[in-house]
Every structure is written in structure tokens, then in C-alpha cells.
Length: 404
Image (tube, rainbow, N blue to C red; front, top):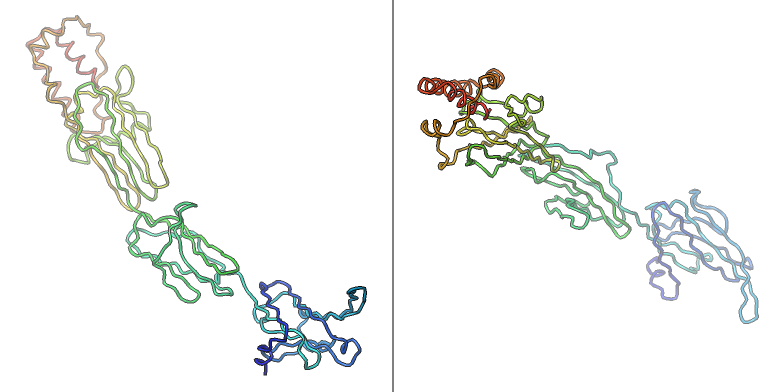
């Protein structure tokens, strides 16, 4: 019987969409029969035959439903007449309020209202963790559940920038849930992910920050660097790491890590043992490029002879591991060592002994191999001094120390 009412083309119909929580008003006009008192107005819902009001008497106990019946004077072509409006109002609309509402005079249907309750998407879980921290090689799953009417479409996107979001496809979907699955994560998985739920009423989003931690990776464009005595050189390396690593430049003459000099520590503490008269031999800079990348530069001014055939190491370490790259400094072949004969003829200036610099401190250099290196060259100079005049010997010794 209800279906026959809804299919009757002579019955007026009105479709109404209303959001959950809003207020809706449905109004029809009663005939003269009701105005004269021969018939009574009636509001009911056809799906469950629930009666809300008969005339102005409440049948349903739900106080959200209100009735209003009032006369209105109409004037048409100079003729005035009175009509009676009969209105049903629902406050704070709920999803289960949807259905077909009938405005009637007793059993006679005057108008049908097809009330469709819609709802903006909402997330089922209100409490969630915005920051997710993991390590490379792990699996990460994030479930996002949303509801609404009509049922929302739930998806995941990775935020690259505001203009180019990257849609994620590895999402396990159920009617209300979309689970993001990231397998064997690497550093490129880090970033901001957004769960998006959308329907015809609206769109909502929820953001998650994935922090992927990993040990340092150190990059250097050089393995060997060819130079001449007195050159000014620059070594640069890039470090990717998360969390922030401890970055250091070190120097050693062989492959024994126990015999290396921590240049960064000495530079940061102001220990410039390797000083020339015009300032320190080396300086170090460090720059943070982004949240996981750093650049460090070692600057060596007028490289001395003793640095050749040794290694400069860029090392980075955090709680997940350590990595380093070394650069070997090699002397250019065309700059050969000055012969003894050449030393005799090239140094003719008389140098007083009072201008000699202080003795080199091997203990502060932190390297036994370095001590051996210096003692060997000093011995060679001592042997040569037996064949040279005292003034020439002091001249050669001063020349040697000028490279320290």
C-alpha cells in the first residue's frame, strides 16, 4: 500500500537532504475540510507507519519533533482566502530520522517528503599517534577508519608539496578502513602521510609523520687528491643520517685507527698545534642542508710536505651505525724532492740561531706514527749537517719547521 502511494503521480513530493545535527522543516497546506474541522491533520513516516502528530496532539514522545499549525491569508486577483499550514520540524537530525514523511488529512495524503540524512565523513578513532618512528628494513602498517553517509572513500597520500601530492596505492581496503602498508622501509619512505576520507558532503584528512632512522652514509667525490707542497686544498663530504650524527675529520699516516689525529676535536677546542706564522694550517666548517643531510668541509692552507701519502678521513656516527670516507693526499710527480746540491746553492742567507721556532710537541699530535715521521726527517737533517756549514744546517732546519 505504501508503494502505491509513492508511485501515485498525483501526490506532490519533495526531496530533502539534511546533514546530521541540523534542523529540518517540512510544510504542507491543509484543505478547507480541515479548516472547517471535519478532518484532522496527520504526520507519519511511511516506512514504519510511525505517527508523530494527530492534529496538534503529540503521539511520538521524541521532543525533537515539533508541530506547527497556523492560518495564512492569501490574496489572489483581488480575492482573499485563508489557508492552513501544517509543519513538522525535526531538531538535531539523526541518521535514523531518514525516510518518507507523509502530511495527511486523516487517511488522505496531501504531500510526501523524502528525507535523506547525509553525514560528513568522520574518523572512528579519535586518539592516534601523529609521529611514527621506525628503522630501515622494518615494516610499517597504519590503519585509517572513517564513516559517513554516503560511505566515504578512504585513501592515503604522501605529501611531497602542496601542488603535487603522491597517491599511495598499497592500501588494504575494507568498507570503512584503508590500511597503509609499507614493507622493508628505507630512508625515502620518511615524510608526512595523510589519510583522506571523502564523500559528497565533505572531505577530511588526518596526518601522520613517519620518521625513518638509519645509520650514516658518507659521500666524497675524491679517493685520491694530487697536490704540490704549499697548495691550498679543500676536501668536502656529504652525510645522510637520521638521527643527527657526530661528524669528524681525522688524519692518519697509516691504516691503524688507533694512530689517528682528531682534527675536529682540536679545531673545536681551539688546539691549533699545526700553526704557521700566518695562522692555523686547517679549518673546518659544517652545514645542515636539510633534516637528514649535512655538508662538512676541511680547508688546508699551504699543505706541508709531511701531509703527503697520508689520509684525511670524514667520519660520521650515530646510534644506528658508523660510516667514513678517506682521501689520500699524493704529491705531484713533477715536484721532486730538492737535492742536497740544490739546497747548497739555493740557500745563501745567513740565519741567526735565535730565530728558530719552538720544538714540535709530539704528544699533542696524538700519533706515534707522526712522531716517527718527524724524528726520521730530523735524523736525516742531522746527518746532512755533518757535511754542511752550521749556518746552512740552521737554514734547512728552519725551512722544515716552516711547514708545521
